[in-house]
Length: 481
Image (cartoon, rainbow, N blue to C red):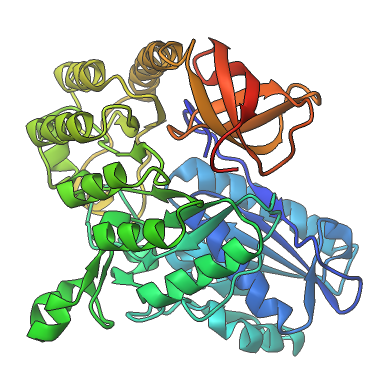
């Protein structure tokens, strides 16, 4: 989930560093959103109890699982190519079984098993606790499928295995599902209705991470601002709850306050937000606590009111501007990023220009930009013709990307000359002698390693920048170290 990208997401093989050579070997690849990567950690935990160790060597794997994304057609094409490769390996390793997890599994269900016959197991996002039974099924020579959506499952009682972890940053899922029926999106169909996790189980998981030495956590959900705990149940049923349940309910602003107050030396991030559900109380919680990072990912998808209505985005361009203004007022140094779709059905040149003008108003720090990809089963696919030619989509996308590059450089240049706190997350991809980390605004910072160590908070004086990266020199440890 890196910055200023158009249509490319990388899969990642996840490894449990504490694995031994005993038992069966599990290989997992994850694609798509942060929630998928978090779910893979839950899967690894469940299967670890069944005697599986994780491996990065596919040749030795007994079970290969691909955690999939259905948000765009290109993501599904990538996953199909990976499945073809795994089946080629399977021919040389008869003991290997291949399974598909996640949104693509939920959407395509038994098609993988019955029509294409390229996998042995299909498991939807709410069925991971059934994995021991499904593995037993394929061990006995039968195909296995469970894609039943749950109204209760949050996996709050599963302690995730931290896969491929740097020991510094970790994901903590707080909600599952989505009630927003955006016409372009498959998530409500693949992950079900919104339900929130008991705040005490969230705090317990964070306490465990803190004890292990993690320095930063990211609270995850399809729509974190919709977090609402009133004792269990779907968000849509909150109005039916008792007066006591309603009076003692914990919303996202309260959860942020609870976590930040309990762990003042732990950095806190969250993703993803929805403009219609982000209330001022969340911004006040962010401003109150220095350890809540000053960064909001705030997808808008289009700057045109006509397009927003066609997408069933429950906010207008003007309401989005008002929210941006409120963020700037309460958290002046807050970074904001976007999701943007180019070429949604019936999009005109004026609609596209409205998107560019919205971008000029906000001047996002970075963004995630895509051409529209028709997803089977969505309202847009059923009711709207995908009528924008691909060459027009690509041209509009490139104009969006080019403008975002300008704005990103504008934002990074504003950091030059400042000294900012950075959490060291790993070695720079371009230089073994440099660390990389992020500041509170989620901007990548690189600087010489010297004697500093992974996981330390350091103050870095910013001396230069690109559109995506800040360059500087460490000037000492921060007060949080």
